[in-house]
Each structure stands twice: as C-alpha cells, then as structure tokens.
Picture (cartoon, helix red, strand yellow):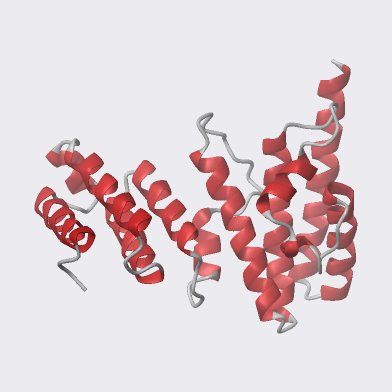
Amino acid sequence: MIRQDYILEWIKRYVRWLAEIMGLVKAQDYEAAIRRIDLALRTLLEVGPDSVTNLAEGEILARLTMGELGPPVEDKCMVLAALLKQLGLVSAAQQRLDLSRDCFVKALHLVLGLKLSAEGTDLAEFVPTVEELVEALQSDDLPPRTHGALMLYYEQAGEFAKAEDALFALQDAAPGNADAVQAGIGFYERLLALSDATLTAGDLPRPEVEAGLAQIRKMGSGEVK
C-alpha cells in the first residue's frame, strides 16, 4: 500500500511538471521551460538537457531502474518520452536543430519500445504518439534501427502499407545489409500467412506482398543492385 501511494504521488508530480512545461512551451517562454525540464530530468536521470541525448539507451534504462521503491520502468519511460518531446520542441524553437532531432529520436525509441513490449503497455495521455514524433522527424534521416522498429510497429498495428514504407526506408538507410534483407523477408512471409481480407484492410493486397517478397529475395541473392 505504501509503495502504491508513493507511485501515485510520483506520477502526480511529474504530470504536474509536464503540464507546467507544456504551458511554458505554448507561451514560448523557452528559458523557463528549459529550467523546468532541467529539474525534471535531473530528478529522473541525474543529467540535464544538454547531456540526456548523449546517454545510450542501455544507460538510460539502467538509470531508470535504480531504486527498489521507485515506480515501474514503463511509467518512467513514458515520462521521459514526454520530457524529450518538449525538449525537442524548445530546442527547435531555439534553432538547436541537432539537439531537437536527437530528442525526438530518443523519444520515438522509448515509445516504440513501450508499444512493442510483450506486455502491451497502455500509454498515458501525456505520452507523445508515434505519429507525432515521426511527423516531427519527417525531414531528417533516421537510423536504420528506427526504421526497423517502425516497420514492426506498423505491422503490429495492421498498417501494412506503412510498414512496407518503413521497410523501404530501412533498405535505403542500410543498402545491401544482410540483416535488413532478412527483416524484409520475414516481414513479407508473416504477411503471407494472413488472410486476403486482413491484407487488404492493411492497404497491402496479397499480390503486392508476393511481389515485395520476390524483390527482396533477389536483393538477398545479389541479383538486384
């Protein structure tokens, strides 16, 4: 009971901070927003806005799991994703475009990780959506593994045409990469096990799936340059 009360108070505190930050960003009071983001990040990760994107994801998770009585890691990841989105918005407004991009990418990885988790975590309303973060990053080149995660996310959501677009982006980002080719083969083979109605609902009819599989198999055999 004590732990549940602690978790509830923890969540309330961060939701209140997020609301304040979003209000400051909306009002374009970026200096005040940065100060509040700095406080939240240092409380959560013990690093500030200029250092958070330098942390590898494994280090982020290690920091989030510290403390036996803390909230579940999933809750902390949700809060961190929301903070990173706001930091990305502030950084973009201040023309710190590299930092902005890095914030959006890390937020996207956190959200995708939560969405793809075996537990099927339900995300809180304050968590940025995949679509919001992808839109924020649409003009940027993304890492190959981001495209791979997006492919799996859209496949899981039944949006097969979008998943195929993410696969094409993965192939472009990692041309000739054997793991990328195998990921594509696995994607199309999984789709072929689905019904025609399901594929059509996902905007990727069976003939297109078969054609895509044939094409990527040629890539794997070296027939397509």
